[in-house]
Length: 158
Figure 1 (cartoon, rainbow, N blue to C red):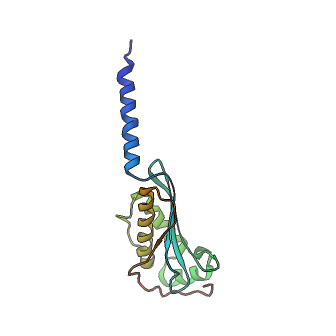
Figure 2 (figure 1 turned 45 degrees about the vertical axis):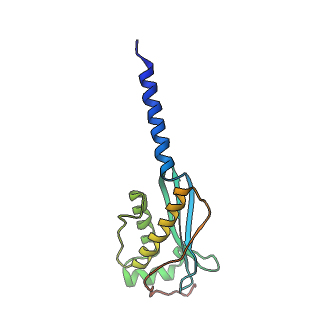
């Protein structure tokens, strides 16, 4: 006859360890951090993360203007930026988001050539969203963006 108590004890220990790990880490839910102010070109960037089972599963990185227009919809801006820098918001936003998911934190995220300003802003916003996930605070976090380089790209949709 197989003794069931050692197996039950192992499952209980695994369950307890999993709960302790998640309670010390990220709490499940959606967490958003956005810039406290619109930038010089009229954009306000934001990062939203979705956490499940203590892990970041999805990331949205984008910006909106005062009318609510989303930066990644601005085809003129994307064409100009792609022509001048070889990268555009839809591309670098996905790349930064993918790195955050794979790294599960802002440490180790690499800057993408042509999107250094966005890299600095992304790391600040993602860090604030992750901190809110640690605290279980689902209120939008407003971040004063520090030391971001001047973005030389302008569009007609600001």
